[in-house]
Length: 418
Image 1 (spheres, rainbow, N blue to C red):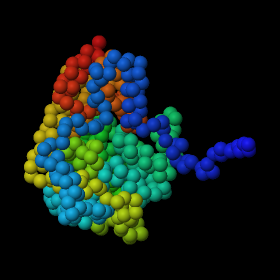
Image 2: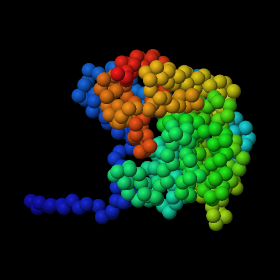
Image 3: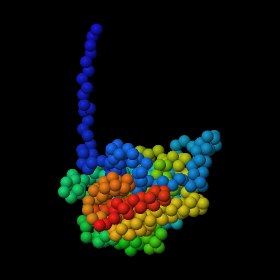
Image 4: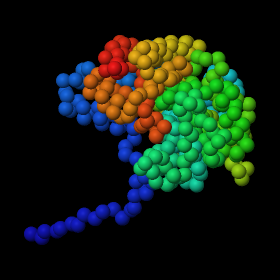
């Protein structure tokens, strides 16, 4: 018998060095890991856990919108209704309806690119910009802007003291400036990321504020990437739902959006990005051409079933169902806000957004751990959204009303000030 021994060799490919720069794990899986670790030690608490953490919708998809999804699936079982590959940019009917219903024809349907969600589109936008740009982000902000910048090689290493990456402009957003960046007094950036209503702070930018940042981006030759994923929560009259309500925005802005919070599509996956036809790079080439190339090269188009659901969202009946969903979550936000105000904490957000941002007396991770252990309520520490979030706690209104009310009763005990 001949015995053959094999030597297992390590692959001969170096790791993308930019991934080694990423700080720990992505925030939301880390929250899940800590929750699971707590339950492993305290399995008897499994039924008591209430999640006010990750911004995942919890109410069922409403009947009219659900029927759109069902009928879209059924059509695939018929010869005349079957669809194979569709256009990577999205079905024409949906692009037209997004432009007319959600933007009041401020944009052209050809400028709409239907996708599988806003987070995915942020990475696609990054692929266009490449590794040489300097990006500016709100601090605190949704982690995807910073993490994708790191992955693309736009940054240096993270400073262990400041927790900031070299080559990123951090736009401090705190109570002192109404959680809107004082961008004029910061270094120029090639790409500026702005989220309104904001995740995590819940702050929604006014028309005056957005007019100022559009003007400055045009003067500086910056591209503004505007994340409007929480636009349907806006109820205040002076708060724009789209950056394209601002004069001149089509000369400097890209907008990403999603049906996730509109209609409970977090698990269904449907979003869109608007890239104006005339938006140009410094060499005069069109940004839209590059985004179209990314979409046609690395994406086969959103599910035709899901796009049928998107069309139902934009029907008159679908819009009514969405409005009712948003009202429900906004009432939850009011309950959370009232609870912390009653306890004596400064509270932000929760008016035009589903998040409240609570000022603490100490560490946000310490508060997260204490609330989990003593109240069995999952929150999000503000520090997970960047150094500017330290000392804050984010709570989400995306929960059933009974869970919100029960969580508030527990928090009144756990968070009571001495």
